Image (cartoon, helix red, strand yellow):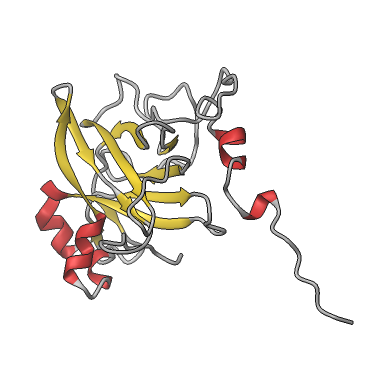
Length: 201
């Protein structure tokens, strides 16, 4: 009997399905009253409030306008909180999507503190990112580090796993300002020149 290959199902490819279910406003659908979205920190949350912005580019350098991103980070003291509650001032988890017009994603959070590994080694402040997009069957995992944490970045055990020193820079967000407030720009390149380093967890 000949072997038959089964076609992909909605659970195996991002396409429009992610936006329909998780990025309702981006898909043009009514939003829910309680939504996990891009406001990870409320004004009263302790720590340095920052905005992260960026684009996602494909291998040809074109904007990926329908990508979806999830963020997981420690709080300003370097502690992860696994309990998500919209009533809390800060949640360690958030989501966002690139816009269909400018192709830019945005998330409002606080700058994370230093995190210790299981072995007690300090990790530079960073944010973990999962990227979902068309043509990607298994989401991509990467990290955001901060350019004004150069000393901590130089000692970070994960960054130092990347043998090519120049490629480490693909994980470093650039400091900027948006409306006079601290922000960081982090562009993700899925393939090609300047490809972002992705991790296999």
